[in-house]
Structures are given as C-alpha cells and as structure tokens.
Length: 259
Image: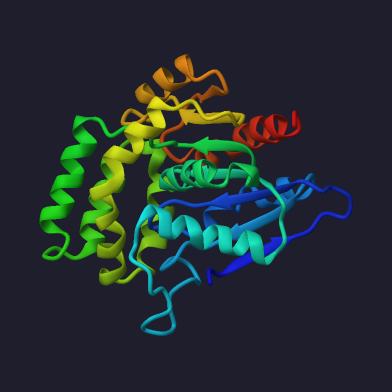
C-alpha cells in the first residue's frame, strides 16, 4: 500500500486529498498543508515508487504500471481510511490520475482542482515523449528528467520548481523511472477521452500564465466543459502551487468552500 499521512480537523467533515506528479512526492505540497489544515481534513500520499512508497519487497507492487492500476492505489488508501468522498487537488501528471479516478469512482469525488493540468500533449511535448522512449534505457534518467524539467519550466522564476522536482526525482531508481515512462504509451487516447467528455463534477483548473506547453489546451476545455472553470496565475509556470502558493491556496480553498 502507498505511504500516506493524514491530518484531521476537529470540526470539518470535508476531506482534501493531494496527488503529486511523476518524479515528485507528497513533500511538494509543503506550501499548502498548513493552510488547508485550518479548514479541512487532509490526506497526503506518495504514489508508488515515489517518496516513501518505494517497494521494500521485490513484488510490493505486483500489478503492471497503468493509469488504472495507479488510480486503484489511491482508492485503496481512501477505502482503508473510510473516507466517503473527498475533494482532490493534483499537480501535473497527478491531474490525470484524479480525472481517471473521477471517471471510475465519481461518488468518491466532491470536486477536482487541477494545477498545471495535463490534458493534451502539443507537438513539443510529444517530441519530448518520443525522445524519452528512445533514450530511457540508455541515458541516466536524471539527465532526461533535468532536460524535461527545463523544457517544461524554462524561465528564471521557475528555478525553484525545477530544483524541487529534480531533487525529488533523485530519489527514484532508473527502473522505477522506466516503469513510469511506459505510461506514455497510453496517455494520448486517455487524454483524448477526457477532452471529449464533460464530467459532471465541479472542476477548477489552476494554470500558470507561463505554462506554455499545457495552458492553451486547458483554455479550450474550459470553454466547452460547463462544469469546469479556469484561473490563470500571473508570473507562474507549470508548478503553480510552489511558484505562487498564496494565490493558489486562496483560490483553491475558496473554490472548495462552495461545496
């Protein structure tokens, strides 16, 4: 089972579950935990192979690495803690997992907050993926990861986010990186399905104005999906919860309080 931490609130019955992205861990939410704990019960988890969810035994995670199997990891924790439903906050690849969970278990999801959401790979990001597929077993994964981080977060003011994700990714193993990278084979049809279907769950996309790879597609989604809205954060790139944490916390907590 995944490693996770829980912070209970004395009065609130609302839960907020945080889902990090590939190469990260629950520690990337360090600028959110204090504020969210004032209002909600909080669940932080480390996805398989990340943070403290590294398999201690060879067969700790027997299932193949697919978006469905990793989604089931999250649901297993939710069920174990008898959480009837939760608001979900994700960043980057974590937003794909949250949307997948909402498709399969809509009753578990009160609302979705998608930070730095990935809902379409443009030409540049598809080229990145193909390069990764070619070189993933040849080049040390940290070189690839640093390259990807720089392309996604290129500006000087993105440096803190880049360093945070690179330092977290150093805790992965080469084999673990390859397992996660194989998920790219199923990402395009899944994202195509998500873009085509307007799920009836309140969804707030929080995107950095400088998130050049992913913001354009999110604008199109929120123009057509009536249950979705978009908040664009100025002077921020992909990792909005780190680069503009005060704005991120204010807008997301306010959104959750509507439900």
